[in-house]
Length: 86
Image (cartoon, rainbow, N blue to C red):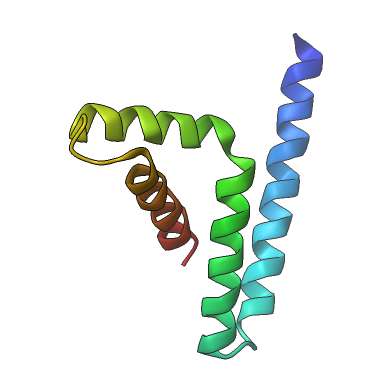
């Protein structure tokens, strides 16, 4: 159990360093570049976050039922991930 706690701690520290790096890097970019980077990160997070994507699909199915097609629900989820990244 102790090993998992230390690995989580290491992961959190790495995430913190990545966020700090991004903050300092983004200060010098133009708004257009930041927007493009946000879209790329949104698409990347959509691809990697399979668990969150499944949860979002379940939630949309509960909310919309059969009123929205699977394709429409997937588009909503993709747009949501992109908006969060922006």
